Image (cartoon, rainbow over the protein chains, first blue to last red):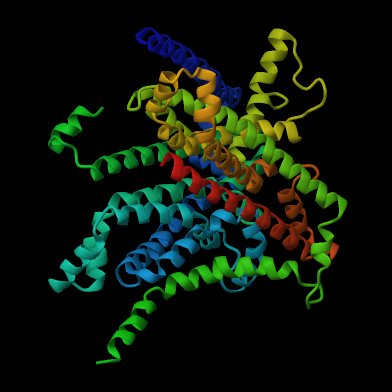
Length: 278
Length: 288
């Protein structure tokens, strides 16, 4: 029996490394290719770091970068303002509405972005009339797009704490509802809020469908436009955007890991546990 | 006094008004625009013309190609992703390897769209890294039989890049539900490895595998940006047909055809996701 188990462990190790090596090549190769491709012209990368020169040579790209960053920040803000109070309120006072809110928040998952654009076109035609055709109006559509991901993050955060007891304790001590939200609930779901915000930023920075079809600009639209004239620069910008998204999402997964460890209390004092985990 | 609870209920509801108003304008109304628009004539009034126009050969072909692309990329992604997930399960559960690969899969599954298209252009585009390298070192021309990167075979390859990591994420929990005791039980009853996989683990994992396949299918079926950035000529897929309908709707007098195609997409995705939810419930019961 022991021999069998040892033989199986060896076989599994071989299988593991063959699979990992093969797929590893497949996944790393495009990233290496992007590095190689974008360094063919030695002037590409210095240009990307030099903002004044970049915005002079590729004004569309500079506009796209600024638009995307503003969109990401505003979408995260609007998402939080809209979702956090509603999610907390529904949990506390309107538990019967919870299923409905959850259904609505997860609805965008089964509506492809390309379909949403078709329906959004008339809404945006009307919005143009009031707010003009600024790229920042995309924030309204993006907030819908990130709703499922943000809702899941915030709902998980709220499930991990006892919102009702916290709110009742605060209320019985004379706190107003805004104080309960801002100073009691919000600090307790900090990491969930941060997760939702990171996801939002990563998703907005990668969005192309809605921006291009509603004829507005953002980073991705600018990359495609630039790809027609200067492939090297557009690959370099793609790589930068990608690395930024990677960093954001990796931070997110680290954050998630820390939160799940906190939910299950460690048997040793937390200070010791923190030092023993790499 | 009797009035107070109802009054409180009303004021409680008031606090949710901003949320519901917002989703009405930017989610519910757009959805209704698609559904109602698909059944509306170009001069107003109800009409089945747009839905009937879905039967046109070029639209049916686009749907066929979209389904084929989604099915093949989902199948390849599901099989390779399942192998990778199994490789992870055989590693130490709290080891570095598993943590790193799961984190990477989480990131790569989100990596779609324009940047992915450009990554593959840099890799196997006409002057891409691999294309040039193969040509220079082995004198192999990747595109001897035509440039396939911008057609279905190329799109399938590119889609696989985000399908495999997604499969790892959704299939790993099911594999974790398999208990080593079941294998030991099979062995103590004289079963072989083959019998274990075909009679015990296989049937147990089948609902999870099928469900994950469906999720991958829906994922590929709804994807637009990757295809849009790669394919600039013609509209082989449904999302690209919708792009054409949206950008030239005034010209053709077919304002609502795009909406009918969009509705078609929603119907396909909804059916697939409903089946997924069904299989997910079965998985939770068996491997939860």
